Length: 281
Image 1: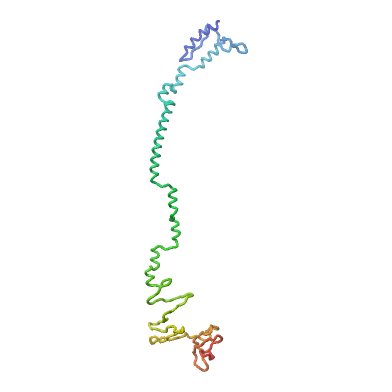
Image 2: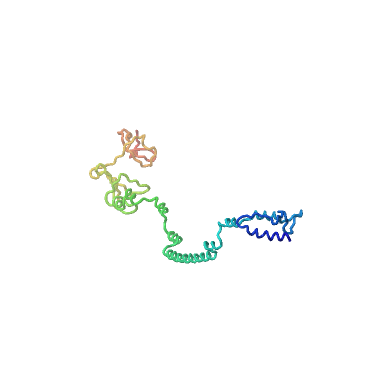
């Protein structure tokens, strides 16, 4: 009963401790190890005593300390006045979402309108598939001359037609002036009584033609000039076995006791005079 009375006297003094930790003084001069309550330790001492109560009061937080620790925090009223609630945030998000969807729909309509004026990349690829690229065209034309190169290098068609023979067929009127004519595996065909005329020094020399029998006719006196002359050669320079009928003028050959310098003919076996007479050299 005494302990209950002492506790009832102590409690009002504990309630008074607000801003400073109270100096606990047990009532009626009771010692600090006086047990409070019925709980006991193994040695029989009280679990709760004035001493343990004093220790708890000493470690307690005062009201001013609590207020200082909470100064960095907002009260629920201050937080509500300063920050948005989850409901408000949800509503704002919903509003902005709706606005974004409306803008997206408007943009989609504008984009669709713009796309209608343009072609897709696949359509462009399909259209360009029938054309030649610049690289392919340059490669194909690499073996050809440009118009400027051809003009500066070769004759035009009108120049070639008026100056040179055509490549195939056609006819040539007027004189053909050239330094050399080379015919490879072909014939020179003269029709209509034409002739092959040889000129030298402005004078008409020998010319060749054919008669009605198809014989080759060598004319040697056209215009008062022209003749047939074979370049002289020595017997040692005559070919050893030319085709039969080959004729030369041998400068050191002679027949019998005649003078040197006779026409010789190869009869298929030996060189003789054109009459078949034996020759010496």
